[in-house]
Length: 293
Image 1 (tube, rainbow, N blue to C red):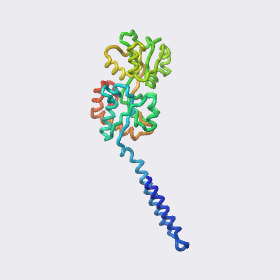
Image 2 (spheres, rainbow, N blue to C red; image 1 turned 180 degrees about the horizontal axis):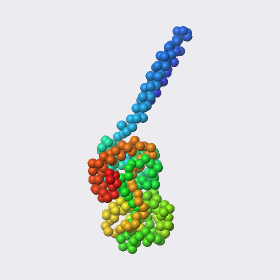
Image 3 (cartoon, rainbow, N blue to C red; image 1 turned 60 degrees about the horizontal axis):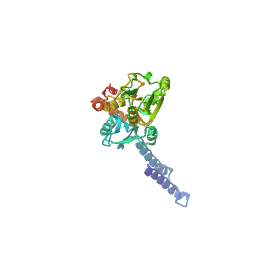
Image 4 (cartoon, one colour; image 1 turned 90 degrees about the vertical axis):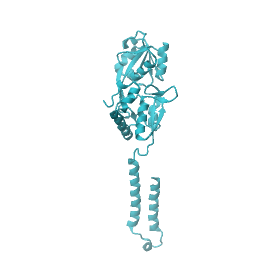
């Protein structure tokens, strides 16, 4: 574009010079069409390149940066070898492999995810990201996981239902779907019955508090709850009555439909050829998958 702007200026200068370089009007007169055609030709070339730039879209894209919470297993987290792994990251890697992109795994502070997205530091938020209640805030992929918010308690705590949490200490992750559910009007009475509702930075801390007796329950995503319970033995259980129901989707910057569509096309293909189901099975999420069903 800079090159074409320079050509445009040069063409204008040529036209001006042709008109003004002589000393007599009759000697310096240049047909108007010559100068006009020179400028017009350069302007049309600039317009053509601008159109090409605006429609080239993702042709030159080589990387795909996924923003995720590095403490949110099984969707995304750091394993014992210091590698970022998880269900969502595996899905993102498969999408990148099919599109010829390099996957960049970018851990983000969950409270700062919107700033990271709007600044262009990440291409999307992909990490057990709840669609419900945020429908108009992002450009979304199709929902791909059915996820509910639940309460986890100690298996020997004697707590059998949400009503038993009256006067109890409940942990919840800051800026999480569980927190949003507890702040809804429908759950105001329940949340008001707690002895205390404590926001923690991530769920590993919440489970440490639960195990140490510093908390009586944790409100959280069922997928994460199942993973945590499976990795910690039979010390904990999930209450039968869910706090709320929701679905997960990938959040792109509002209006970025082109990138969303490119990713969605690959996810659909993965659902059709069985790759999506295979990855879900690897992470114990087969029963939660909604895409392709």
